Amino acid sequence: MSEVVTMDLDTSKLNALTEQLHDALVAQGGDASAIFRDEAMLFLRQVIRLTPPKTRQQGEAAIDRDLMKVFTPVNGDFLDDLVIEHGHNNIDEWLTTAGGEKRHVKFTYLDNTGGPMADFHNKNRDRSGRTHNLKHQNSDAWYAPYVVSYELFAAYAKKVKARVGRRKAAWAMSLMGMGGKAARWISRHVPGAKGEFHLTVGDKPSVVMINRTPGIGDDLRIVRSALRVREEAIAKRIRLVLSGYSKDVAQGIRIQRHAVRSQEAMEEAA
Image (tube, rainbow, N blue to C red; front, side):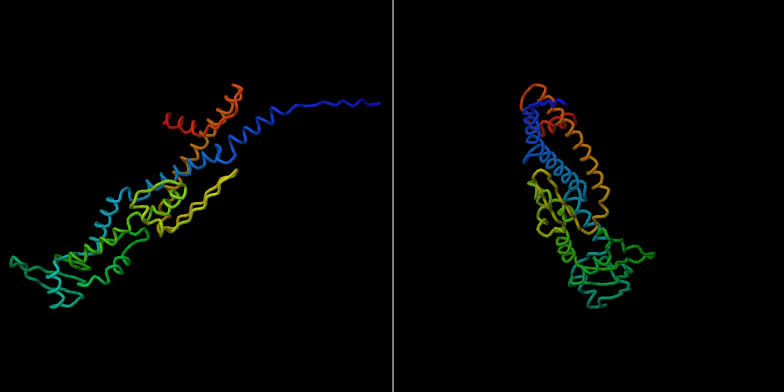
């Protein structure tokens, strides 16, 4: 006849520790979501910082250089006189300067209205938006592919410069969606940014950040580098958090949330 042995196992302490661990790590607002949110925002800030241009002034200066590769601004009265006397296309003449000297000029197109400027500019931009230099020609003549007045050139340059920051804006959309802030010259483009942002909170937090800005493929190196840095940071912070849990248990106190402390420790070590 076999003997039946009955045992009672008290798991109340284990259950309590498990509940504490759940509350600290994966409950709403726990360490997992806090670390996830912190590192996602740090990733976005890094990508935004590294995505060209570095500053608004740098972007505007690049636009000035690019526009001068395709446009030649001149005095408005001089331009109007040329159009009246020679028309708009293919000017190949010897002109007398204000000092009485003869100068050979070859102007492909004279524009005293500014209407076709955008089409011409866009036609001569590469996939990253930069322009090719059209002013190289083996000739002693003053060569210009597209001549406009200083006033029309300045007005068009101002219009193009207003777009500076668009390349960063789709990332800024996600940053601002997570409660972060972006510089005004970037955030002004967020309403029309070519991107998407979706955040899921709870036990399994996730974020979807989509950037469809033209030329974004050129920034793949930046994105991969930022992701690698943040992945390493997440691993270090998780180890610090788990170490904190272990110390709490060893001291016989309730398991605390350690995400903030892990971030402070990372900053001190940096």
